Amino acid sequence: MSGGSSVPRVLAIAGTDPTGGAGIQADLKSIAASGGYGMAVVTALVAQNTRGVRSVHVPPTDFLAEQLDAVSEDVTVDAVKIGMLAGREVIETVGAWLRRTRPPVVVIDPVMIATSGDRLLDADAEQALRELLPLAHLITPNVAELAVLAGRAPAARWPDVLEQAREVSATHDVVVLAKGGHVEGDAVPDALVDGGGTRLGGREVVEFPGARIATTNTHGTGCSLSSAVATHRARLGSWEPATAEAKRWLTESIRHGASLEVGGGNGPISHFAGMWSRGGTATRPTAEEVRDQWWDGVRDVRAAIAESAFVRGLADGSLSKEAFGVYLAQDALYLRDYARVLSEASRLAPTLDEQSFWAAGAHGALVTELQLHADWLGDMEPPPPGPATTAYLDHLLATAARGDHRVLAAAVLPCYWIYADLGRDLQARAVDGHPYQEWLRTYGDPAFAEATARAIDITTELATSADDVTREAMWHAFRVSAEHELAFFEAPLRMTGPVPS
Ligand SMILES: Nc1ncnc2c1ncn2[C@@H]1O[C@H](COP(=O)(O)OP(=O)(O)OP(=O)(O)O)[C@@H](O)[C@H]1O
Ligand SMILES: Cc1ncc(COP(=O)(O)O)c(N)n1
Figure (cartoon, rainbow, N blue to C red):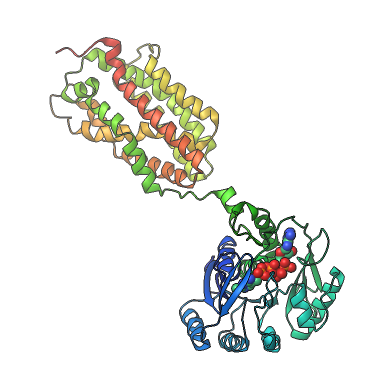
């Protein structure tokens, strides 16, 4: 594809269908469903619905030329799909533009007669259309259109369709996508046919078999198929995979057409049915939005921690030595298993970067634990873990055991984030004479602040790319861990009694 964009810019030049099933409306939907950026230049306005065509209005062709130039003078066009051309003047205008701009992929669906039997091309314009064909790389006639181009009666059998396609391909020097939608029987094969035999890897015919779906929702199948092939051709670079992909998508879209309940005649196909069922229509939050939503969502917990008697006592120095000791001992117990949980996060991490980050976190937790003993606890026998410690660790270990590293990352995050946030407040209280001055200083460790920022980045990035169910599970794990943080800060005073006044 020229221009380097991974989304091909595809221009449809066609007539309208106000009911959205055929014509340029179907083209735009098909281009989008095939991963392209759709553009549209209207050749003719058609008053039609799923039951038939009522009338056709063809605007002046100098205005058509203006529309075409407006597009090509501004946008790199990676592929063009041409549908209804209405009459000779329109064909000549589009032909002149094609000769001037030479788009790299040109697919012409030589629309002549609608499924309903109504003419979409003046009878005297058929010769002009023939003269346009060598400007195309691929043409996609149905059985009736192929017969007109071959100057024969419509083929009833598939081998005869292929024979006519071979002739038309050789005569007009263009690859033909012959379509079996109107051939009798249970099969609806399509085939790429190259009468010259050089443009399909040396093969004359490449068939794409298909089973007929019992449905009346076939309005616009020809328009949709040709737009999808043009888009995939621009993406994939050759006709065979482009056609295979487009036919698979078309079949899926035909199958879901009836459920749209559009119109009382030949209804449309459901262009986005596959995407809707596989990906849904939900948008995803950015990493920044996740960050804000999650932090907002634990604001109550964060406030309750700041207002807890333990944290207030730690801040103003009124906390009893006994309660502080209980806290440190529980913290040491917590850190030992927290390190195991971080090791598991490292083991599950999909990238080397993340793997090493969580491993460093595990190591950091163990170093802190050892430091706690060296500086504060000495060789005191470890006490049994209290209920808050046990509950917090059970939550983390259970999340680790479930094996989804994204949910685990969310579960371990509050221990970084809330602790770092609280630390910013507490380290400012480490004034001379404060009984816990040394401890409060440890909150100011810049390496921990940096690790916290990275843990937030990693986890919120994981959340943006996760599906809705996983993102919800991540948020839940995060919120529950935050609540355990609060319980952990409330526990020492519950175990030793209230702060002496
Ligand atoms: N009932 C069906 N079941 C499965 N595929 C179908 C069915 N009808 C048509 N197709 C497919 O739809 C595409 C269009 O084929 P068709 O021969 O109907 O062209 P067309 O007549 O130009 O389309 P339209 O009906 O829009 O005018 C082809 O890929 C064909 O295989
Ligand atoms: C503007 C326009 N272009 C093409 C078709 C052919 O589609 P179908 O044969 O499915 O009606 C159409 N009906 N309207």
